[in-house]
Image (cartoon, rainbow, N blue to C red):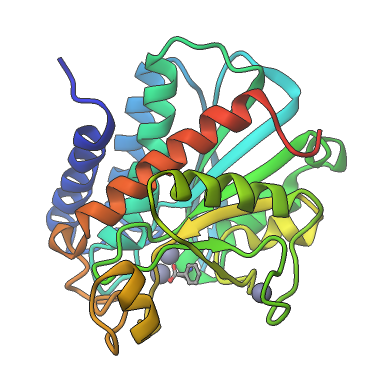
Length: 295
Ligand code: PHE
Ligand code: ZN
Ligand code: ZN
Ligand code: ZN
């Protein structure tokens, strides 16, 4: 039988790595490596019974794509969106950034479907193109969406880098608990943050907030007032001694020293961090499939 859960997610990472190797070492938007990544994800979702759509747009003078996959059932007036960018930078295969987020939400979708449960709310999974060119795919999607359709989106969950080698455990700071930086997200974002923090807490993992500073694909959603949340294990930032105490790993080193470089391969993924995030993502999807903070 085909693997499920963490084993299956690991297979997706291996596959994305192979795709990069076969296509000049990267999976950047607009390249054959991106197209192959999209084909791989789409074929899995089609086979599992999702309704998939490919949305074309222009970025950096070329054509590229978002992939959207939704459950055929569930309340179309209360849509739960879950997204990850599928493109890499051109300098490397992009396995932590963002093979991990892509593989995690792909497997959350497949496991949800395999469980046979009919979600109360409609689940819509988005695989964004051209995030690395300035959130171009997610910005295009939101800008093309009529207001009536925006109003039906109860919330947006974003996963960008969830297996960093020197991992931190961050959730987007919906309630602005630190009172600084970008401020709180739209109403409902605080409840999303709490669901994610509680899921990590149940696994004995303490989280910290990371500001809604607009560095990933939730940006266009919060800009139009859609509640959002998500998890993140850190990029070029440096782990503090306090963080190394509670999370392990190395103080004074980057969360991901291979960020945006050629060494962002399958070997760059922290299995424990990735597995913990997979579980949290699955729990959040299962929870919001039944109940959303704002509807
Ligand atoms: N969006 C950044 C990238 O893809 C990574 C990032 C995610 C940074 C979340 C901050 C917060 O390179
Ligand atoms: Zn990146
Ligand atoms: Zn990223
Ligand atoms: Zn804050």
